[in-house]
Image 1 (cartoon, one colour):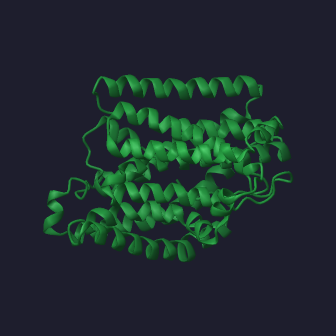
Image 2: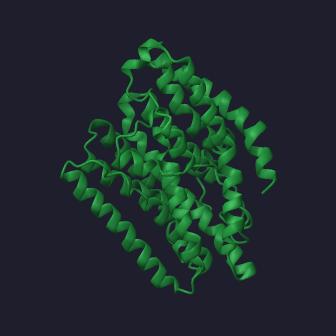
Length: 351
C-alpha cells in the first residue's frame, strides 16, 4: 500500500502519457477511504480503499518492470527487491517502534479493545510479510499490526510477478492466466465466506492483477486503444460512482459474501479509472485528482496507512467519536510527514 515512485514509465514519464499527478490523487482517495473506515464506523465500507491501492500498485510496478525489460532485455529481481526494501522497510521500522512504545505505555480502557493487545510474535510476522495468512488461518493476535495484511499480500504477489513477467510468455497467454487466477481467488473467497468459514480474505489480490493487466496492455502490447475507449467523462464519473456505491453498501452491511463482490468491483472500477486518467480527459474530475493537497496526501499515503491504525486503537475511548477521528487524523499526519521527510525520502534517494 505504499505510494510508488515510478521511473520512466508507470504513468509518470511515459512519452505518450506524460506525468500524471492524478495518480497521486487516486492514492489520496484510497487512503481517505481507509481512514474513514477505521475512524468513522458508519463508513466501514471504506475498507475497499485497499483495493484501490492494489490496482494502482499493480499498474505502476508492472509499468516499471516492463520498462526495465524493454531497456535491458531482462528483469533484475535482486535490484527490484533491494528497491522494494529501501521503499518499505525504513517506515516499517518506525511502525515497529511506535507499536512497541504504545504497548509499553498501554492504558486500562485499551483492555476492552481486541485490537490493542499485540503478541510479540506479531512483530516477526509483520517483518516476514505473512500477516495475511497468520490473520486468516491462525489465532495469533496481530493487534496493532492487523492492517499489515495488505502489505503482506502485495509482497507475496511481487515475489512471483517479476519472474513470471520475464518469462517468454505471449501477452495473451499471460493475461489469461493471471485473470483466471484472480477470478479463481474471488470464487474461493465467495464460497468460503458464504459457508461462514474464516480466512476468506487471504486471497484478496485481484486488484493487483487487474492493474498489472492494464500495464501489460498499454506498455507491452501498445494497446493504447484501451485508453482511448475510456476517455469519456461518463466513464470516469461512472467509476467514482461505482466505488462510492460500494462504500455505502459495505457500510450498511459487513456481510463477508457481499464484501467479496465489493472488493472485486472496486478493483475493476479503479483499473478503468486509471485508464480514464491516462487518456488526459478534461473536466472537473482530473482537476480534483490534480489538486495539490490531494497530490501531497498521495505522496505520504504509505506513512498514513502504516501509522493511523495503531493510533486509532490507542486513542479510542479518550474523546468523542468525532473528536477521536480528528485527533487520529492530525497525529497520523504529523508522524507520516516526519516519516516521509526524515526517513522515507532519504532512503528513496538511495534507490
